[in-house]
Image (cartoon, rainbow, N blue to C red; front, side, top):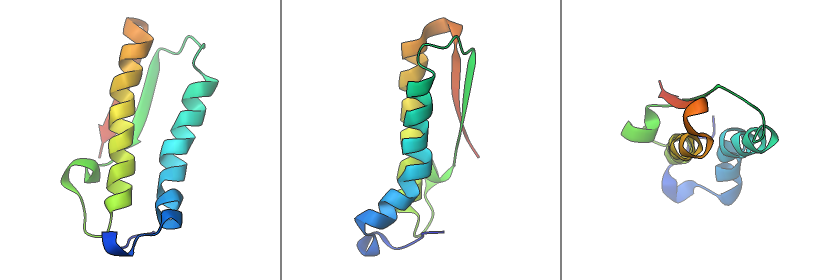
Length: 87
């Protein structure tokens, strides 16, 4: 875990948290943008909405997944269901 208070976060720590979720998702969506995918399931966290102490970067990364899911659902249209599950 890379948990730290917001005042103690560095750009490298934020990148360590964002990389796997946000950059990884971006790469996958770009690689599949022309594929006839019918379902895209993203695994976010309730921390995106409720937050946890010391997890501001994690919460923000998960909220990015939620917003990207909404945008990607609109972009891909009715033929692809895009969901972000906050657990």
